[in-house]
Image (cartoon, rainbow, N blue to C red; front, side, top):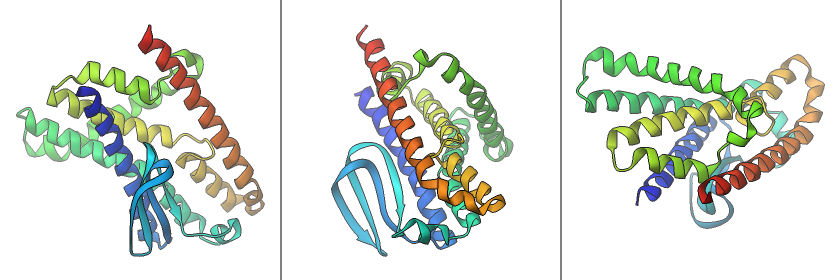
Amino acid sequence: MSYLLIAFVIGFLILIHELGHYLAARWVGIPVARFSIGFGPILWSFKRRGTEFGLAWFPFGGYVLPDIETEEEWSKISASKRILFALGGPAANVLLAVLLFAFLNAYTGHASAFNLLVLPWAQAAAMFGMVLGAIPAIFSHPGQLSGVVGIVAQGQEYVGFDLVRALHFASMLSVNLAVLNLLPIPALDGGKVLMACAEKVWPASRRYHLPLSVAGWVFLIGLMLFATIMDVIRVSA
């Protein structure tokens, strides 16, 4: 049962991340064709305000697809709007971590105004810095990299059925999701921000957006496959 709890937490964090992108898109006026939780064929969906909201067969992931037909049409949207759209997901995950810390402080009997309104931001910032500081280890010790399988296995071992640990794990994972998506890798939010900023300085860089994004996806898919293989080896050992 605890495995299902961790899987649910991961799915919820992904939902919040994509919701951040969706709300940012609506805020800056970017039309959205599809809001999907998961990748692959859509299992169930409904349409509202011109957007298809769907659940795909592989739930550990998701995307918000702008209602844009061509690369040229996408480039006509101002770089500032595209940057805000890209930052919406990580911002939503950081905000969720702040809310989780506030709830955790209240639940553990520390419900002062400072602990509910100020301390959660400091806690989220400290965790953000801790995760950011651990990023180099991913490249120096790739064998320690964990994917979804490893996160679920480690999470259920740490959380069990303890609510305090579950809240702490969810906040930590939410910040992790924000930090990793902000890495300057094409196809990730950070890469999209970097390319949009480069476009402001060097407009001709638009021509490299598509090949860089494809290369980024190839790299990420390879990394996920490697992490999954390492997870399976560790779990079955």
